[in-house]
Length: 480
Ligand code: NAD
Image (cartoon, protein in one colour):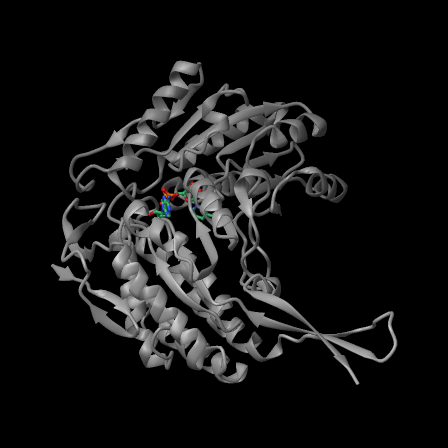
């Protein structure tokens, strides 16, 4: 079994507690790695290392050199993508091929932000006073704390790391206690890429033991969080206490809306990948499928025909389409929601059960599940399940679709399927979400902002704007 050490100051160190906990393979159920159990002492050590590195070489390095280091790190991620994907998939149970695609794509974030490092410009500002000159320069904030969930440890950390380091900040990263290993593997590449000691550090453990001390540490100036809205709210309050800047990428219950003029085949495929990718364990899952009443029955039937063919099993097997649920508590939560939906009167037309037996490892699988006759006020339509469970809701016309789509506390993503350009643009304008996909679902890029509105979060990752989210403008006044 692999036993990891903490990564602080480019060194591998024992946790202060002298204790480790097991990381479990969600397919086999076996403990396969030991992860250090951090406490406030380790967090303090990591944050101080990051603060020293910030005051020392990193923020003073010419931006072009920082950029070259990020570029090298991207190349190393690409070189070792197979290995990183195998580790991450072993920890979170996602299909290894899907994770490989994600990690190869992550390298591009480092190339993009590496290239951007020496292109962040300030401004000379016209002033309404004589004989004074004002300019604005953008400066890094200091130590950034990254806190991430279990569904995509490496990409979700990388999306923060690339712009934060590009801007000249240093970092302490706390991955989910369920999926810490891949970040330690990334740390092995950090020194090779030439990141000075202390620029990137890792602490591991639970939200209470490691996450709390990290967000509360007085030397942390910026928090970048991805996770559930319950933890997000607590961290937001801790950030308020310390007057820290924060971004929150939280949950969703995204509507995927199909009109009767849509290309049926691509809409059916879009509805299925919208919800069942990563067995539903994605924040942007299209978990509310809104179908225009006139196509409802045919559309559901076409989905069911495809679901019957789905190959479910070992995430390392490239022929599989759905893998296990990442953690035992999440597996139990999804099953509870299936019960809730049935009690509420939703009708299950596909799945609805756990899968066990040969080919299903320790049995942490849930069938792709579809509920019809769902009303938007049911819990199954309002609450994030984070599993392979689709709620199908009927609508009559555009107004009805917009009303249902927006009648939710979340606002992360939305899909619209129609051949009408006018209708597509109307929906894009009126749906309250951070991202709207027209005739596609899940498209994303390092070049464009991603994030949520309403209870889905605050701030954006990706694109040029993301770097400014890790910088402070400084206004300089000069008189002759
Ligand atoms: P979670 O909120 O339980 O945990 C996320 C991280 O926060 C973990 O590292 C955890 O240890 C830490 N944490 C928990 N409480 C904390 C506290 N009080 N102080 C400091 N740290 C704390 O989320 P999860 O169950 O790991 O992940 C699933 C959630 O993540 C879903 O709600 C999903 O929608 C969301 N998510 C959002 C996005 C996005 O980009 N919007 C992407 C992926 C996942």
